[in-house]
Image (cartoon, rainbow, N blue to C red; front, side):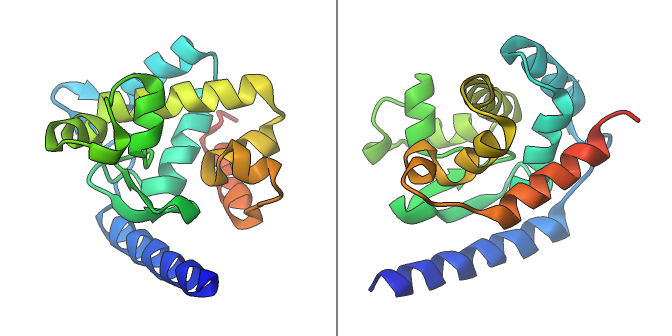
Length: 172
């Protein structure tokens, strides 16, 4: 049974990847009601003490800059993830934005999908992880969760993608 869940999760992950790849944008072309994604990223990088290039790398990896990206299965917990940084309701609850992730409302989902809120939650989480762990571990924890990583789960493909994009977005 566990193998079937993994296969279904992999198929859905690929589906989300290909859909978001087709709808993806660049940081430069993305705008949110007069507030560009680049300025949202810069503000949150400063707020949480992380490199803006790292936030861009996560966004590129997670959604290919598609604010409408939805992944119906996120890790083994089967939590749906939303938006640019693929925020789950449980993470939004930890951040204090969702009352009960088991009974998330449509308005809470809309709030999570908003670019400013989505990037803020994702940046907050990345900041927590990178201030507590070394970068490679923190990157993988964003994908598999702290408990997943600490129990031995790894996603080296994810790590490679994020680091490749991080190098691309860093000023040279």
